Image 1 (cartoon, rainbow, N blue to C red):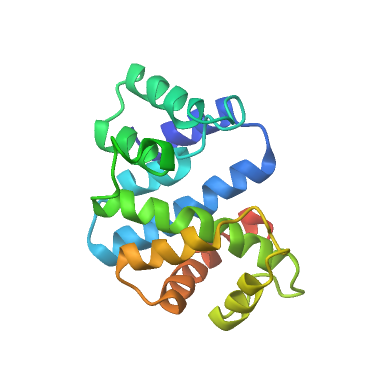
Image 2: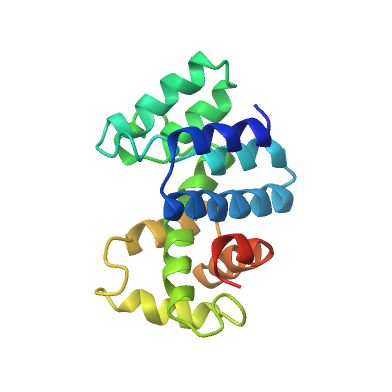
Length: 185
């Protein structure tokens, strides 16, 4: 599956603008990490776009991810993509562990990208000039973006073998080129 096909599938199953923007943010972060690690950027991009494409129709576990996986398999999508999408949900990690770079990275960027969007939305300059210490300060406020798991953000950095500030900086850098599409310019 190429990026255009993934984009079409995302838009077929997802109408919510915030979910589409989340997919774009995660795609940007996945592409950035693929480039850093010398991985296939298109595959990683597709995983980022599609990781939550079924969420609007099937938001409850375990249907979320499993319904999408069946749709992807029927479409003949590469199993590496399907298994990466499945692996980002904790209820699938016994069968699809975070044991490969693409899986680790999707898990690591998913929650963080959501949190970075929330932080950027309350700043006058949005993503421009956003620094890791400001993000870490917001992470300490449990009421801010309360649905975002701080533990998953921290675990994600650990899975990538990065210090948390570096992981945050990487995701900010990844999202800046798509800030207009994210409404964060």
